[in-house]
Structure formats: structure tokens, C-alpha cells
Image (cartoon, rainbow over all chains, first blue to last red; front, top):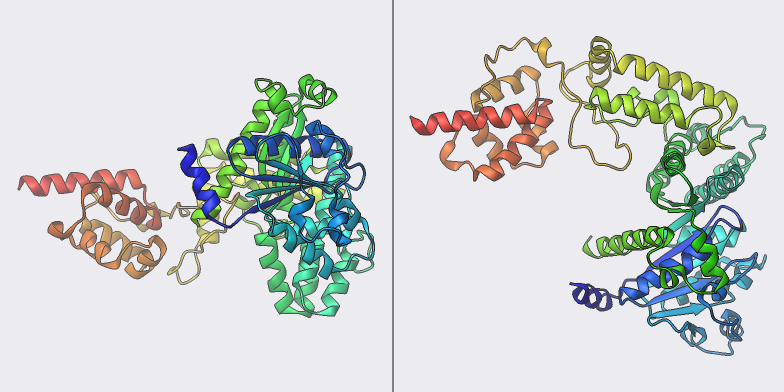
Length: 316
Length: 197
């Protein structure tokens, strides 16, 4: 069975790019990126991890390898001709790492052409799954990357600080997506204004925005409705300590439905587990170091879900 | 994207229009917990007024949907257009495609179906009384028009194998807001009796 699945993925050229972002530093984005990557690689598919964390790129540490001299900038500065050449082996079969993507995302003058080019190069990489650790940043390039991927994953812990940052990120991403979809300059300006809750137009939420857009441009209003319906970010809740914490994921989903009118997909949760800290200290991925730990079980479950979704995308 | 005042009570509670009282109760508890003023899940997202509005809407939706008579009246006024020809298709909730349709005020149609033997004739009669065209059922259920005609016309020799027939009957029943199980049982009973003869 497993072999069949592998063959199918390799026969098909389609790859999935997942981005992990939002929240804040310390919510577990790098941890989940590294460990889901390991889980997927064990299924026999080729996985590439990309470290684009502005705040502190350290995916390599989670994988127990030293910082590499090779990075994305070697490709950007044309020291190598193909992005494939700057991939670093991780010592884990089927798993490679690309570092230095943060430099490009951070650059204020990064043109959208350049971003598009980078995304194209990434899409051209020889892998089945590409996981991008975006870190906690809110920069426009980060948002664009989040929006351009096949699936954006928000990493949240059940704390007000983390939830606040996540909603801030989601709002920015949501409005940016709307802004990119509309054609009228007037509507674009309206969306820019809506980002600020204290705006003079009295636009308090996405629904107010839609009503305002309806009054000035029906076509754009229609596009906004469509974009809203097609925007399905994903959520992983990390460090849950109780059943009530798990429920928060469902509540966040309901809140997003009411506020944005979007359907957020609750991918899963990872329980709080001291083994996580231990594995990080040993610089070994938890799912290899302590496969039976409760947190590792949670991560495996999420990875399985992602793999199944990949399968779905082949079928349809 | 709908404002809270534009959402149906079912959308407010995130349940299907055919939800049971138990499902509504659970959905209400979830909604109450989610939109409680101290709820962590909504932290920083809504303004105080927005939360108040949602809380009021949740209570109102719960009050109406848990009262059988009020709910029936609500369904009648919200899922029926004045012509009575078409049933508004409720929007999807929670990404789960709905197969069930809002239940119809079936009793109000005062059709005496006796002990509910849902033979083809009866089904056709019910459908016509509701003012729903067969092609509407076909479009909604994606069941071939011919098969629907055979079911209603009791063209027994043409009917598909029982396992498929049951599936079609389920779709048919749901699109009319009838209880699928009763319709299937009734029709199968009718088939068996016909065979004996």
C-alpha cells in the first residue's frame, strides 16, 4: 500500500507547498515544521524544508545540523545556477533544508516579480512536499508567501498574546488577499483604510468593508465575496494542556466564521509535553527521539492529515 | 460574508436546518463559550458592541430553535418564498456539504398518507401538493429524471437494484423534507407487497 502511494506521488509532478506562520515567536512554528517534515519524509516522499524565519532562523538546530555556508543568497547572487544546488542534506533520508530565505522576505525593496521568481524556483525544486517556516513576522513579503502557498498554517498557543498576534496576522493576510483581488483603485484605498480600526469611514470589520465596497463597485464586491469563500487558512494549536484548550481551536474557527466569514480548517493540536523541550535540547527531532511521546503522536497525526490532503489533491 | 443580522438562526449557531434539539443544545453551548466576553478564542478580534450583538443573536436563535412551534414558524417564514415553489438553499456551514434540506411544514399540508406507505403514487401526490416540480428534485438530487419518474410511476420492472434504489429514495425524501428512513421503509414494504401479488 505504502509503496503504491509513493509511486503515485513521484509520478505526478504536482507538489504541495505549505507555509507555517502567524502567531508569535515561541509558538512552535520551527518545531512543527521540522517534525512534520521528518514524519512526511518517513512516508518515503521527498521533503524540503525552507527556513524563512526573520526573527531567528534555526530550523537546522531542530534537525541537529550545523548552520550551513550554503544558502538562498548563493542562488540570488547567482553563485549557483539552480536552487536545487543550495539544498543541504539533513542526514535524514528524503529530507533537505534550504536556509537564508529570510533575507529575501525581509528586504523592503523585494519586488513582487522577484518574489514570484523565487516562488517559481521553489516550485521547480525536486520535492513532493515543501514546508516553509515563515516565523512570526508580518512583513508584506511574508504575507504574500503565506497567500501564494497551497496551504497556509497558523500556529497558535492558547494564550492571549499568541491569539492576538495570530488575528493580527490573519487580518493583514486577509485584507491583503482582498486588495490583490479587486481592480478599482478606490476600493483598494478603502481596504487600506479598513486595516485601521479607528478609520474615519466607520469600517469596523470585513462585513462593514463589504457593504462600503458594494456601494461603490459591485464587481469588486463580488470578488471580495468570492475571495472570502475561497480563503481557507489552517490552524494548529500548540501546547494544549486540557480538553478545554483543545476546544479553543474550534472556538477560533467559529470566531473566524463570524468575523471574516472564512472557513478556517482546524488541522489539529499538539499537547504540552516536556519531551519537546528535551528533544530540542538534544537537537534531535522529537518524532525520531521519542516517537511514543504524546506530543510526537499529535505531530504524526497532523502529518498524516497533510499527506491525505495531498492525496486528495491528486484525485480531484 | 454576512453580518450577524443577516444570518439565519441556523447559521448563527452553526447547525444544519435539520439539526435535532440535542445538536442545537450542543451548538448553543459551544457558541456561548466561544463568544463569552472573557473567551480567549475571540481575544482582540471583536469590539465590545460586536460581541454583545452576537451574544444577543445567539440567545435569540437558541430560544426560537428550541421551541418546536416557534421553530416551525421560523422555518416557514425563512425557507419559503412567497410563491412556495422553490426552497431557499441554505448556505454551507463548517464546510460540510449539506445533504439535508430544511424540514418542510409537512403537517400543514394536511395530506393524509395513512400509515405512511410511501408508494410511488403517494410520493408524487405529496410532491405535487408541495408545488415542487420533478425536475427541481432531479436538479437538486442529481438523480436521473427517468429514475425519478419510474419511482413515482411505480414502474417496478425498470427500477434499479434495491441498494441503489434506497440511495435514490433517500435523496428524493431529503429534497422534499421527508424522513428518508420512513420513505425507504415504506417504499420497500410497498415493493414486497407488490411482489406477493
